[in-house]
Length: 167
Image (cartoon, rainbow, N blue to C red; front, side, top):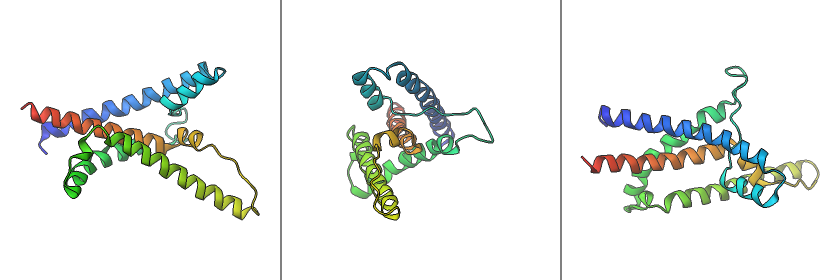
């Protein structure tokens, strides 16, 4: 990768990181505004799933999972796309279905992990039933940020390929 591609990639990453940070603040704002209107609140939970990044105690009490996991998610998916296409000998990872499949499988994996986790807690507490809302936990977790950063990594890969094809 030459220096121009590297700089472009890091600019795209910085824009993606900034987008996630602004998107989290906007998401919290929408939840506060529409919390008393059930239908609109459900829609804002679905389309604006991020919790706010609390930087009030930075650097001592900051949530480093929220701050550092977008880096891993972005670059993991960005570099994984080429491997997926080479290993499966398809161009599926560059299709527009890939982010939907990634998000869908991520939600399924998240739900399964929570079922096992709360099942173990229930078993260890003498079979006490513990209700849980997997979407609320997903919304407030760093895993949601990881997945959205990965989707932005996919978008960046598409942009980089578009830039390469114009030369």
